[in-house]
Length: 303
Image 1 (cartoon, rainbow, N blue to C red):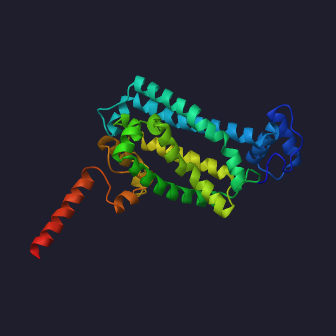
Image 2 (cartoon, helix red, strand yellow; image 1 turned 120 degrees about the vertical axis):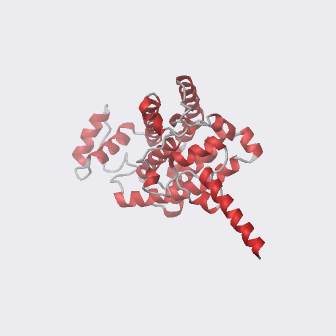
Image 3 (cartoon, rainbow, N blue to C red; image 1 turned 180 degrees about the vertical axis):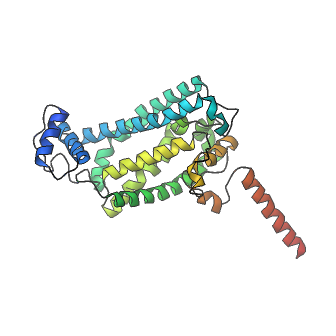
């Protein structure tokens, strides 16, 4: 794998911005973001440390940064009309309890994995060099990751609802029958590992097969996936929610029913697995099943 800390870079300076100035002198063809990226690896002079710190800070910033608007919305009465389960607004204590457990999980379960992230990337050939890939390549690869991760999540999540696995692992995540943003990663360490394998393993597998993936693409994919997971647990259904534009998108309306009824709607991002395999949950899905059974009954009776 090409290391950006040795690619067209001068000697590291005592400060990050000193490294940035040196990088800018010798790499005039790079854009501002690419210079900042190269300056970071140049300044750190340790790719494992540079990637580890950047990965962990990115994850924590995005997770809690995206959860914050939903915490604020829960405190504003105006938005209650958009709350799917209007009688179940999380208390401040529930929010704090959830945040503390999630933080504990991040530092004890996810941080060690993140520290091993760079060696794993190096092994499969994931690039950290500059310049960055084109926006079209990034969008194409992220779209593939969404589809593949959704398939993994559907089957792994459905398996988690099997008796022994549910009681010993998945039940923790269902502590809140009306989910809220912070609860997206409120789960058993085992569940975090199993379901997280879809998010991290999909791009790693892609890179191992194609030898064509930049770590920036993976970061953007993780950011989008975090947004999706947090928004799906928000508990709010708006007229402008994405599934009104993309009918196959899951969203909060899809996942909230799963938490309320503890069964069905197992997929993460899309609705097609639940539709094809008849695991949709909710009143509409139940009505369709009754109508289907009645039609089959009438047909059998007529014959």
